[in-house]
Image (cartoon, rainbow, N blue to C red; front, side, top):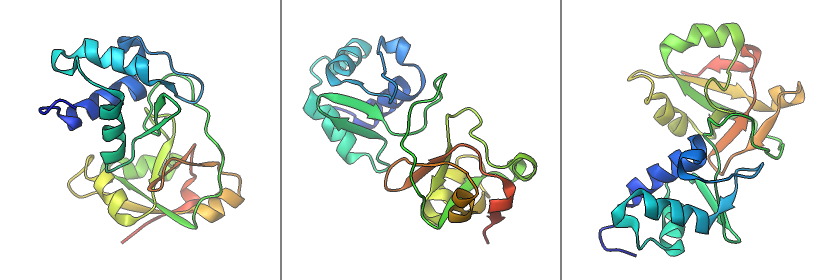
Length: 185
């Protein structure tokens, strides 16, 4: 690994390439968001001169050190696990959620959520945290005083709301009606 490799910058570029605009990097994602590590390496080496010696081990290090476990790498392939704004939905495996999940949002969004439930907006799925701290962190990106919503996930799932496992900290869903939400705290 190059001594001066900025893993955060590599991670941000990977996010952009795998979650938002893969075509800018000439990457082809399959229906589950996978692409080859070799293709990613070629794209990143082309993107920045200082990344010309980037290796698969460097990408693996980004994957392993990501505090939010944003990526998955297996069998010479790489994908982002969540946060996609690509057109069309990536396939996800349905799963039964934990009893309760959380979502952080801005106070300004609360009325729209009450009226229409939690919706993916510009993403493919609604992102839910397994704990209050994770939801609060996400909510702070939208407001200095975020609103924390508790999701009665088991009840919503029983009523037909679909849930998908994102990673060990994040769950995904399509739309969650207000009837399964409550302001937490």
